[in-house]
Image (cartoon, rainbow, N blue to C red; front, top):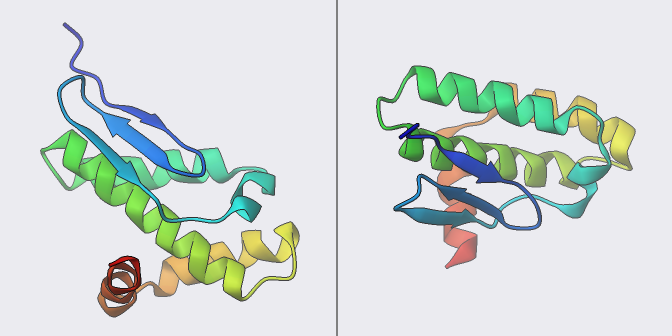
Length: 107
């Protein structure tokens, strides 16, 4: 057994370890128009896996941060070009408060 985590990104991201399944519904449709977002997701997931021994939990948290950052960046963007730049700035400046606020708007 390989004990892999699978992440399928899209309008809703799905994460599974073969036993547990979680979905993350943050993000925007403009994100799919930006070259390199998949590579960015991989880098973010790598950072989360490096700091959390539960790879499933790390993947869920990483994709959550990816989606919330995408929503914040899209609100500041006029198109895919500015989204790419704003995504990096929003990720750099992302705060715990912004993450908590994103969850409050979902409920």
